[in-house]
Image (cartoon, rainbow, N blue to C red; front, side, top):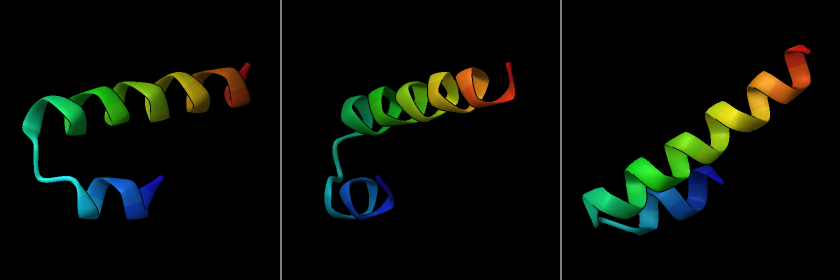
Length: 30
């Protein structure tokens, strides 16, 4: 995940990946 974020410079894609990470973290905490 972090490698994708570092490689991709597009802000929209960065926001998308961040949302995916947040969702994954939320699932892990529940």
